[in-house]
Image (cartoon, rainbow, N blue to C red; front, top):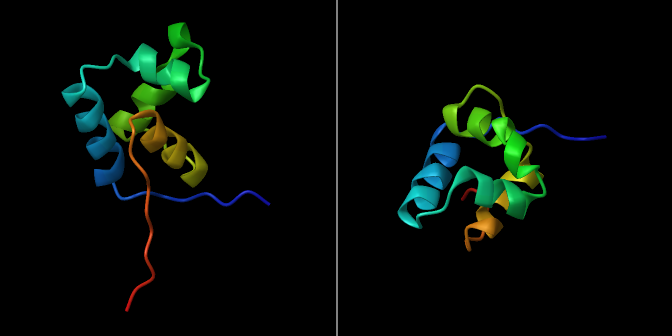
Length: 75
């Protein structure tokens, strides 16, 4: 069973901001994620919030930017 995670709208926006600060194109990140760089509409949809990435995709996306997604339990 695949779990779908509806991320806070700020997570994709934060990852987009980091990508832009690093001067990386969507095509570069798409390539790092294993998405065809010439058809990187999925990454655009995530950044614009028109589709929700799976948690595993968010983790790979953060990793492609040199970041780690770290979730801590409440309390």
